[in-house]
Image (tube, rainbow, N blue to C red):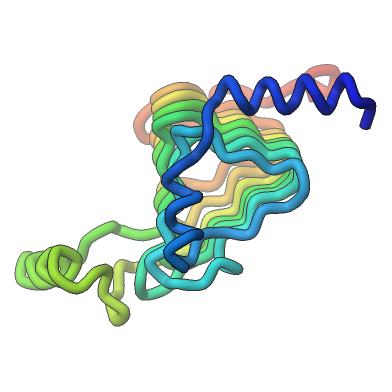
Length: 206
């Protein structure tokens, strides 16, 4: 990398500010994440690792994260490939696994959850909340966790929601505001709530 491009990158990071949340967590010995060379956390990014294992959140080379990555106390894993983008206000929460390929663009205010967030039964929800408020995320809990996979070159529009158990195929596009409850075929555009296929990308659009 040339000295000019290095300077430009450092200037861009300086404009985004320093992620004090991440730095303080590291200083006090809390688990955070593993970042490959060139990976970047903007000042808005939040890494929340209730499981306590930094190897369970991995950010690939040259990927930029501005949103929140969280793994729950009972389990979870988030893997982000190379040259990805996670927009501000986006939340990626895992209790099973969320695998994001290379060159994936995730816009702002997207929610990607591989779990229900809370139990179905009211008494269990109350107990979960009580534990979170007093002791931290429960270590034993079932939230019907189901892995999510987002393949290479996918694009997820602003304010979309990707639900548990979904695979978004290579080059798939999720329109803004869509709620994805079923798999998205490769090189297809989906929109709506629940999201349905609008059309397939032609060969010259891929």
